[in-house]
Structure formats: C-alpha cells, structure tokens
Length: 116
Image (cartoon, rainbow, N blue to C red):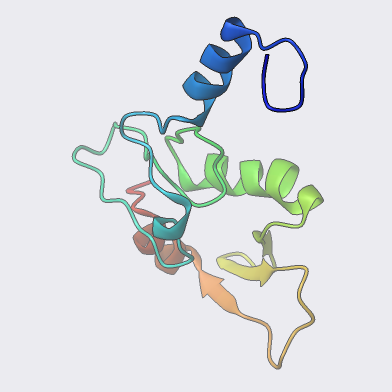
C-alpha cells in the first residue's frame, strides 16, 4: 500500500520511473533557447535538436519552417511567416513590442544550422 492507503502497482512505478528519465542525447529545456543553433557536419545530414521541433529532424529549412507553421504555431509556440521572396516574420503569441522581427532566409539558415 502507498501513503494514501491504495494498492501500489510496481508496474506503474516502473513506468513512471522510465518516463521521467531524460533520453540519451536529449537537450534539457533550459538549453533550448531562441538562439540555439546546430551546425551540420555534412550537407546531406538532417539538422537535430531544433527549438520546438518536438524531437524531429529536418533536411531543409523549408521542412522545418513548415513544421513550425503546422504544429508549433497552433499551440502558441513561435513560427515564421513568409512575408516576401526571401523574408520571414517571427510570429509569437506575445503582443508585439514594436517593429516586427523580420529575418532573411540566409539569417534563418545560419541561425538553425541548415545548408539548404
């Protein structure tokens, strides 16, 4: 029995313990910042550990930006809206404090470690 007098399941305890352990290679939440970047070792390797990627890897910046638009944006996480041929606006749920943040494709590629 546990502290509140209900039967205690060892299987449940094992499941909770397994789920609470950090995966090998996982980046703690505090380390995933707006400025975190990952450098690719080779141009054909996907980029890993991107902010708000939810564990996915991406071969191209376009794939990553589409993921942010489709999955991060609807739940209130930042994403980038295309506003010109080579310009993207950072979209957040916070009220803008001034001018919108605009980035070029090249800036985003460098920021997130993409080569294409």
